[in-house]
Image (cartoon, rainbow, N blue to C red; front, side):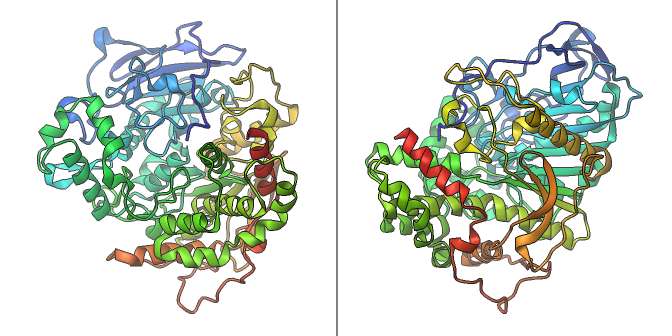
Length: 616
């Protein structure tokens, strides 16, 4: 999918105007000063691990224990992006040969300009998304000047992705989860060094989005989690089962063979060029097998081949889907997560003169859900979406689409939203509450005034209200100077700046207090209930509103996951019911009224149809 960032966004906040400095064990770190009136400074490209190259390729990261050359580090320029294996989300320029490297294990720190070693400020550590195949701390969306200007410290950590971050092949002495280990080592660096920057190592929040949310969910479940972080916020991606060992070993073995290496020859794999690694990633046929693959609308499961974190029984001893997290956690999602994905898929198919048909819908269900496809089809009926599709199809503006094909498209989009984001947020909160650990939920529904990614056209930006990634600018306070692909100017509203302040304050409160409540609003703690339509939570729309979130129908996806797990997995685990207890065969079936009940709101489907009409 190439709907998202395709060109480097202009660096809009960090410019070296002065030279603040901090002394740590490795030497003096010389940083720069944020521009634009922010009273904040930054320190970029601080090494926290030895370069993972040569004999360290595919290996767990080794801590950086050297002294800086001449005892000083110029920390005013961005680190190299880790080698990318896709380019759907990350600005394309960061994927260039010049700006990417295997030598990428660096982190950035932003602090208030007046912070001292005695300030003891809350610390927020960011983990980027990108399907665990791309991503970079150098993406300007993650600039920390505005966050640090609000009396907190931001740390962003590079971690390896794709085969370099997740190849597991025990027979070759390659044990996987390299990317997660990078994140953990970054957190250990924070514990050892952040006090020198003015941070409190006892007040650390780990937060991430999309694949980053899945990764922080995993880190929050580790035995050592409470010694590293005070809490976790998972934005759109936590609460799903993690890949099993058998799948990851098979993926590693196939990748080795594609590289023309034996499955016990680590040296052979380490000797391959980056071009060979990327080519093998693109051509390995095993990566397109199994249930969970369907173009841009793939919904993976623990047995779907790919390069992901996995339950190795050692570093990741248990699947957090079964064990739950060990620290207070916020689970969130956006109202219309799948809009960007379904729009891109539909546009690509239209270019091939393909529109959804009943046969295509069954193929989508079969490829993504295997033996669980009939259950999904039972509750997600395109006929329930026809009322929204009919007037739009009748307008004649959507070339090639009729009521049936448009209804199918809308159904597919709702399935992706519910299976991958909305319902996993509910599940994660339930599992956390079952352990008597506090959890909270949110839904982001705001319709942004301005495009926040360069390939989102300003003319139709309202279509993408509450879509995947939409909350990121508000969490970072980066509402101004955003790149617009059409070159038009745009100003966020005062209400949007206020919403951003509220969200930044809540994220900071989670770091400081392990509770996201602020002076502005009390964030109600999640409580499992049989009434899934009214779960306690916060809605971020035009302001932050404590109230109820609709998780109706989410028990279905626990049942889908159970079917997929039972297919060929030897492990079993209880699924939480609405009341927080284990699900069983006696669980009553959901009411069979399809999308009319499962769909949390109807605005998204109509908006998607309008989007397609505007792009065809």
